[in-house]
Every structure is written in C-alpha cells, then in structure tokens.
Length: 320
Image: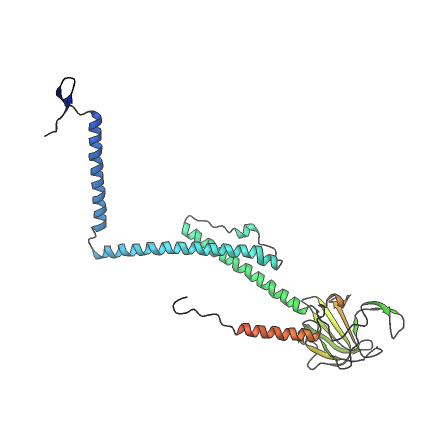
C-alpha cells in the first residue's frame, strides 16, 4: 500500500494531502538503481572471489599472483640495471676517456636505438646493446692504458750511472781531436767498473766495439720511439746480447775507457729510431739516479706484494 503524506495548512487550519512530484520520483528511482547496482557489483565480486570450483583453478590463481610479484620485482631490477649502465657510460665519457685522452664516443653511438612493438623486448635489447657497447669501450681504454704503460716504461727517464755530468749536449772543443765538434750526448766521469744501467725498458740492439765509442751497447725503445747508446765500457753485463729484453734499471755493463777517450767515463746518447740525436737532459727525471730508482722499484714491489696478499673483509654471519 502506497504511503500517503499530509501537511498542515495554517491558513485554512486543515491538513492537505501532498502529491509526489516528478523530481521526487526521480530521486527515488536513482536511490533504488544505485542500491541495485551496488548489490550486483558485490555479488559479482563475491562470485569471482569465492566461486573456485576446482583445486586446479585455485593453484592457477596462486601461481598468477606469484608471477605478478616476480614480474614487478624483475621490472624494478631492470630499471636499476639500466640506471647503473647509464652511470657507467657517463663516467666513461666524462672521466676515463678524458684522463686517458681518448676521443669520446659519438652521441649517436651512445644513444643506441631498437625497434619493435614489444616494450619488454625493446627494454631488454636496449640494455644488452648498452652493455656490449660499454664492454667494447672499456676494452679500448684497457688497451690504451697497457700501451701507455709500456711506453712510459720505455722512456729513457733515469741516469745511466751515478755521478755528475761534466760534458753536456752541444758544440764543444773535442778533447782528443782538439777542434770544434758536435757532442751528441753527455759524459759521466765515473770510475772504471761502475755499473751502467738501462735508462728505459727495451731490447738490446748492439753489443759491439768501434774505434770511436770503444765497447758500447745500444738499446731500442720502440714504444717510446727512442734508442739509447752507452759507450767506452770496460765490459758487457752478463747475459746482455742482441735481442735481449731489459727493464729500466737493469745493469747492462760497466764503465771504462775503451775507444777514443782521454780517460775513464761513460758517454751516453739518446736518439730517435731513425737516428736523430736528442739532448738526454730533456728525459732525465730530476735527481733520479740508478740507486734511487732501484730503491723506488723495491718499495713499489713490496707495496704490490702487500696489496696482493690483502684479503677483502668477510661479512659476519648476521650480515652486519
């Protein structure tokens, strides 16, 4: 039975019947429709949530939930890896290549592009290509570092014998010929039998005798582009022969007074590989005598040995 409403009219002092308007009917219909829609949605959700009829369906639901969590974890990890790769690429460009004076990679090469419509495949391909590019870049930098290290090891940077220089590079009055002549090296007035060392790493080219140089040794330093000569020796060092590799600081012979000379001393020259004479003083590290270089090398070897024997700190069992 429909509910009838009345209102009191003070003017007529009587109750009058209230008839519902179309607006009232619209509100009633909206409320009823909203409640019905809410009940329907709740019913559908309850059916989807609790209407599993077989154990297989329940297992698949649990498996899907696990896969969704794994996918979310994998996406976060891939994002983190990509950010790390971008940091390495930036460090490669702004630090390593500038430090080694290697041309930076073109921006077009750095910004590797991939095609395809699968977002995960594009993401994976981009990461793989960026990793390959970074490996190639580090390989190039490593080769450059090795080459420069070899070059530095071969630069004739120390004195060939302990002692002061009495005759420098340039024009002088030859002490034997008594006339002006270009002196293409430097002379060290050392006692006979003083050890003579290689001023840079390289390969022994000659161990021979000439009327001018007397007994002498020449060493080629191909990585640095030089050749060094050690003349007026009394004897060649043990095991020193053409083709023999030597390192900076190795004893290669002993000073003497063989050849055209007025007394015991060591004559030392530096030349380019095509024979152009250079001033040896341009290569000497200040105050770096053979004795000091040997002490420095021994100290360096001790440091390397200690570093090699150092083990990384192990984490405790509780992970702290």
